Image (cartoon, rainbow, N blue to C red; front, top):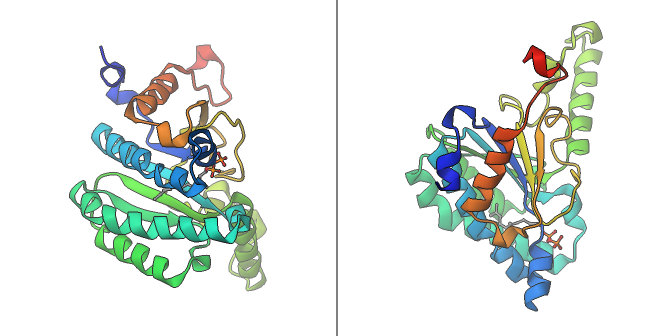
Length: 245
Ligand code: FPP
């Protein structure tokens, strides 16, 4: 029985988030430029998007570029931006055909205009698609997102539009970039690092965390199925006891 066949279709997470890590180490191991590691990271993106669509997973969020990544050498940032725009262009037809709807979270205003244009175009082109929602985290970090939310709430409070006692978790969620997106139930990080790196800190309160030593460029559908199987074998208690579930 294949890993895919072992998956219980009724117990799949609605939302999977992935920290795609290890492109640089993959390149170093092969003795090639870091940018080739990033370029080789596009195949696994295609694989997880396709697999998520096939399985009927509703949301897939990929950490493509963090706020902190702006601090990388200029050449690497340029290469990543170029790769992003090329990938968006090259993948447009496939995403449309596969009924994928594109969204972004993050400070996209920081991105070069040419990239913003391509991405906006693809968001517009896929807005009526009803399959997988692919969320790209671009120039994203949780602390930036939470601070932005708090500032907006404070402004509204000053304007008398909201009172502190009326603020609930649900309302707070509406100020986050992930408004209308359910919380991830599974967070995967590749490359063996076991940390969250400023990614969806508020939203992963109850997510299952899955760490794999595989470097991102080597991650394939089978690795994704393995993560989903492990998710299905975990007991999610949400603060309750096993007996209460
Ligand atoms: C982390 O590896 C990866 C990134 C900072 C970029 C992720 C980008 C891609 C996978 C390219 C394509 C993506 C899309 C959505 C088109 P790292 O450079 O931090 O690796 P290291 O820790 O081994 O140095």
